[in-house]
Length: 136
Image (cartoon, rainbow, N blue to C red):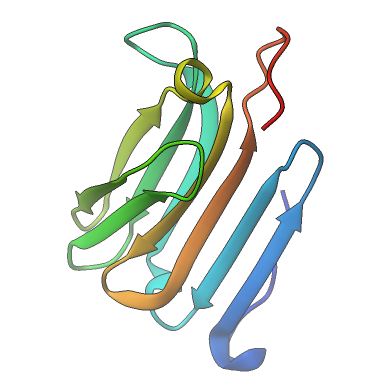
């Protein structure tokens, strides 16, 4: 792990950071560290889905603030739709997407919060299962 200093002494707290890697891996983080960037978090990981046992993309949405936060997870490609989650203060909410079963493992989602239009996190890539796959 690493960190990127975006405190008020660096760009007045505003940040726009993109990380790229192989197999269309992309993570993009935008926001303002003086607003939702202080209290909101979204992480993506791979783990077995409880209904199929197959590898799925999991999102964990967190809120360390003092009021509820509404997150929206929007599919940018490979499937359609958006999903809304309300996270209470001091809580986290997790959900998963069966991208292997539905989209040959490819995913592209953006997570936003209703309380701060500058805050977003994009998660793009491919779930590797060790079996042959289709190009995305």
